[in-house]
View 1 (cartoon, rainbow over the protein chains, first blue to last red):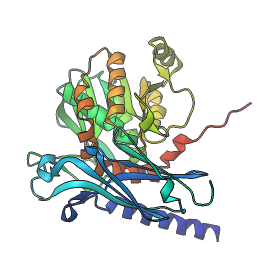
View 2 (view 1 turned 90 degrees about the vertical axis):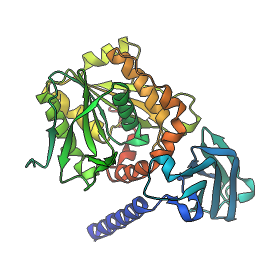
View 3 (view 1 turned 180 degrees about the horizontal axis):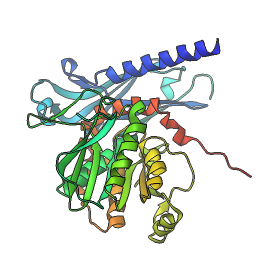
Length: 131
Length: 249
């Protein structure tokens, strides 16, 4: 019974990892790049960090769709294309980062604080009903 | 084609007694970024590669020509082993063992594994500290006498761990240099710190200006490999490096 459960857990983990690894990060149709990000659940806060190299600090926008979902956008300092990265067989240009982050616990969006450290964005939001 | 599960193919002869620097994808891609930059600054040329059916069926194209993803570069008694793909977690023991055996065959003077050690809130650190570890007490003492910070306690997971474990069994001196780094964001700044310490260790000046000045572009260009590597880090239970080993009283 326990072994069966563990096997199912392993399979679910592997499915998640495969989906994570195969997801595309470059989206020419919307001119966006999906940034790498992390979500940490702390006792009283949810901390989201987002890696946004080459982004314009003044072009960062964090928007909450509801208490469990945030959208993060950051304008690139300059438009980037595949040719800049020496990829000649694909066409497309990129003007900003964009990602929608699902939070596993509800938060209070109005109390969110956003800080940028060396192109890593840190968004701290109090958890709902805990502070 | 070699028969072994993992083998090293030399296309040009590598002389005996080299100093070998390894940079495989790991946290923050620190080792890979550092070793690649080191190879470039030392004007190293391709002399071999690692061959195995355990690796994904990939070649990396340069100027229209395929190159194997795990390569050996060489110049004047210095060797760098780098990988441009995430090594599957399941292949890491065999890959590490093969690298150690090859280093032993070459009577390596020294193996230096470069990498990162992930720390919380890395983004708040002004300059990452580099920690050293070595395969014997004598070498640890020597590193201390040179003013290096020693990684006294903790777990190591992945290729560094296995190289550090197996190399002494072949009588090889091994030093690990790990800079505080991001876990899953590329970290060229940590790579620059590691190279500064490597330079002091082997008495060579390694120019890291480019790594510092073009850090953001490097981070942008290596994010796909970082994401793939993160999957393998999860599979090899890399987060165990955050654990505190038990103290026996």
